[in-house]
Amino acid sequence: MFKFFKRNDVQYLECTALGKYDFITHAFCTRWGGISKGRFANLNFSVREGDKETNVAENWDILSNSFNIPVDHFFTVNQVHGDGILVIGNNHEDRHEKQGLDYDGIITNMPGLAIGVKTADCVPVFMVDKVRRVVGSIHAGWKGTSLRIVDKAVDAFINEFGSRIADITAVIGPSIGPCCYEVDKIVLESMRGYPEMGACFSKSERKQRWMLDLPKANQLQLIHAGIPPENILTTQICTSCHKETFFSHRGEGGQAGRQLSFIMLK
Image 1: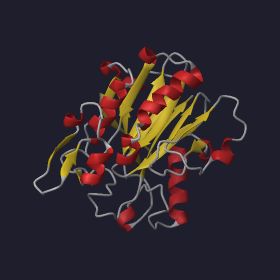
Image 2 (image 1 turned 90 degrees about the horizontal axis):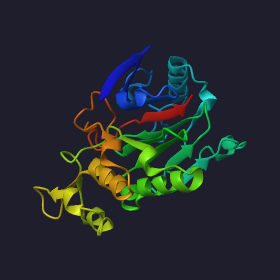
Image 3 (image 1 turned 60 degrees about the vertical axis):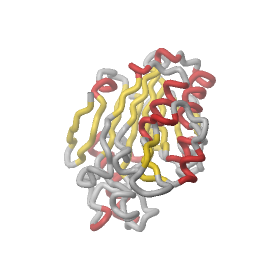
């Protein structure tokens, strides 16, 4: 269902179910294939954590050359752990003015626009309407999940593009798993009333701590929004358990870079 590939030096994970759609390019990038050093080694796409801007810029160039996508066709936003979703229509003329605004999701039907999210434990979610040819890229940490960001993304597909639930496929990429994601009461309380909450939390060995299955929480949210379970695919890869392949904020003591996950209509 998921396979690792390599283009030039860039190593990435691809969902084979999406790979059968010839109108899509997508990748869950790993941490390998770039030039950043030390704790950012080495395909880091964020300067927020202290990496050199020149290194990050060169990493973007490497990705651009590997996938034959111009650098200025990659589009990201200033992720703020909220539930804001930016919708970019096919005739959107000022998309560059939107770059860097505060959102945590992007949805578009514009060909040639590679919409991406940066993660290092949070959940990257791709959404695809195979009929209307609409794609979405969502960043879901615990705050965005508690605000039901993927549920709102489904609403945006329906309300903005006329998508049918049955035509939407959702793919949950590598993120921290329930084996490694210990949370406190603040996180627990934020998700009170969540669908099947008992399936998302389990007791930790420490008092007043719980283990949260963040991918499962987003999967259940998508099901609650009406997406057929068979249309929801998940990697089951924990970034904290696989620090040799992915950046992990929790697994690396808050000293991690950020990998990019992107999807594009050709």
